[in-house]
Image (cartoon, rainbow, N blue to C red; front, side, top):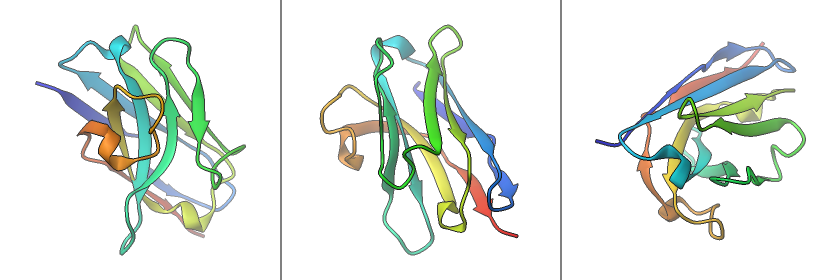
Length: 124
């Protein structure tokens, strides 16, 4: 069955960095685009970043552009999110998800499988 397992979250001080990992299994990873979303307490799940399946074209939310980088390794069935210059407002549970779309990539409903999430807390 389809599985997406996130890891790499934790507690970091403002200005610090974290690298999130999402290990995929149960499907042909290279046939899917992948996305990262996040959800803070009391807020809706929001788009963070998206990467296409072949040409590694990436898209970002304005709030993370220039600080976060999404990448993937199709040989390892893994998608990454490098997060630099972290801010307290980046605190959330981060989820990876798969999609077949490269147009409505910022919408939650465009993704059909999700991981369980990994907590990122940015605090001094």
